[in-house]
Length: 158
Image 1 (cartoon, rainbow, N blue to C red):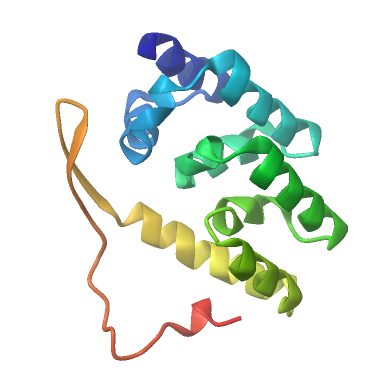
Image 2 (image 1 turned 120 degrees about the vertical axis):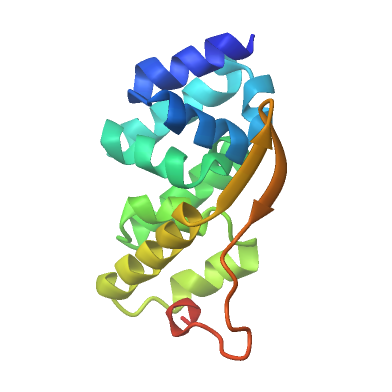
């Protein structure tokens, strides 16, 4: 069954083997999800609310966990709130990982679209800099670059 999911990511998003590997190592349990009941409906919804195919593929590359969240309890309600507040919908790849209270706090503290973009860029850079060491498709070690923990990055403060 995992070959069907891999083929879906390659055909739908034009992912290279390296990109599919990044998605799968980022969220291995995606290979256990039903394409028809789980993944395809979420992708179709994201496209139907106005995201372009390349925006959806970028979101999945940055945050493959997006496809594991509940459609009814997390993705759809958050997208509706983003649309209502006129917040850039591609922010979902960043905001989906927040707890409900943090998500609501982010929405209430929004200052400007420029700040949203800066925060998302910092998040995407951090995800890109993560190191995955795998063996036979299994994550053996996952690290993020070390940070100076004595100071909190200002880009995360809303």
